[in-house]
Image (cartoon, rainbow, N blue to C red; front, side, top):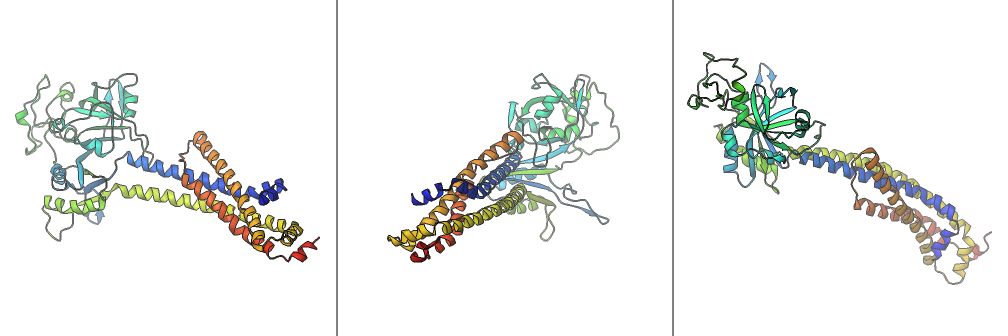
Length: 448
């Protein structure tokens, strides 16, 4: 009560004294909550792209001094994904060949150029973190039969099927008509700002045999049927007798897949079991792929592996570093506030010298005097810390609602703020309290 009455005696001075602490604590709380929100946003964005995923691509090729970069060598095959799932079940939860395409898509009199046309197997959606909002995903049988089915992202559903349900409707990709069997849940933009919903996903076999294959080996009838016996994935291809310009009234509706130009795939996406380290999974998968590709000892790998979580960690570490730097800058204002606390406490000791002498004369020990002034300093800083937490939370909510910045409430920030405030009270209040405890009672009583 004694230290509290000492503060109430000069309320304006006490309020101005804690102002520096209030500003510093508010800045720390707001910055830490904005930083936590940014880290969570980055984590969520990359989680929507698939968690614990290892991407396997072809190795680079150097020709005449020119390096093609990652994926320059077509060396991956669909059975590589099957081998990884079969021979490495302790690490591999699911694996899918991945094939990419590009081109215009047409619905009625509308056309669109999607950012990505991707192909995978029945595991592809779960590996990449996609969920189906309406309809269904494709199954193993549809992948094996290269069925003319696809799933579309929310952007394509909005642009090409505005006001109508796309499920069961046709969509023409290049010269082939596919049936929309599902609409994907919206993911929004990825970490690079690209629209993830501007996509089409279909069986990888559909891309390879229908959008990329040669078209002359299947005998196409007017009704759209084809002689399946003439279609073989192991055929020897020749330009002789191939009609490169099939009639548009026949080709888009054929049920027969084209023969494959190549049996390789662009990449393989592997989902690692939760709790397993992707680096350990890559070490386990490497000998399997080398055996699949008949690579002799000493021969360099003809594939590259990339752990997607490494990029997530890099982004979150960058955000953490920036947040820590801003918190450090905010801490400077706390130090300035601490100096203000010390200055005011020194003034208080000088003004109350006679009071100190009187208390010592009636039996107060130097330790009692020291604790009184130290508690006053701690109380000032703690009150400032609590007010700062309230202002910091208000600033965080304002930034989130009015400016759209991601924020996340941080209990750690509040605990740290109160602890730092109390620590500043102890550090910067110790010297004035110590000086008060060392006063001579007789000299203090004669002080004017």
